[in-house]
Length: 238
Image (cartoon, rainbow, N blue to C red; front, side):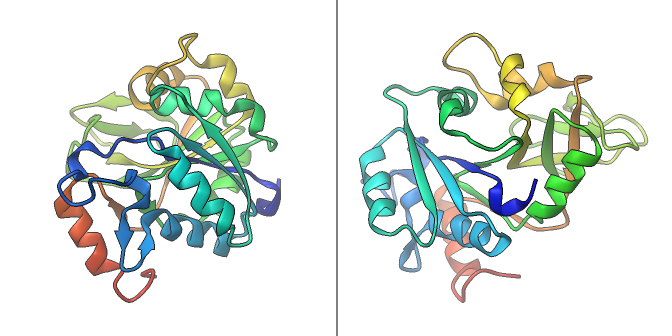
């Protein structure tokens, strides 16, 4: 599928609890980064890559996000999937299922940024005939869900606190590619996590890791938020 016909689903429902001290009145994706919402940085990258249709999965203060992007479409066609109660990262995507028109589709954590080659990701996903592809970057830190181990074919072997001998450990950068068929493997519950409740069950079911050399940024803490403002002070880094 061509990238201009591929939907991008962005998870925007986070409460941003750890950012309350610096941004108490806005959803996490809308925190100000040098005069623009953080989400605009993500959207700018998608636009440069050729994405034209975006589904925003909103929750906490979703009206603020929806109002802003209805007034500032930036060349995108936006759809909005509002959750009335927290559904988790997996539940939010499942809730947006019937707004997603492309197969495969891309999905993004809205509080992260990584300048991934999205055409390369789509080509990789197709070549592997994958059900789901997870963008990963090499890491020396365990991160919130341990390390991801890949075999030589880039198949995901599992999520472990200690990398298997002979395998480079990778971390999830919050960018995904899913076939529509992945919905059939999701938990029956409305509320669930991609990282903890869905991805471990995809191992050995067409689940691959797409390595990227790009740097990864997130706004999960006030310290990382301050770093991002410095990094993006002169625009999006290459």
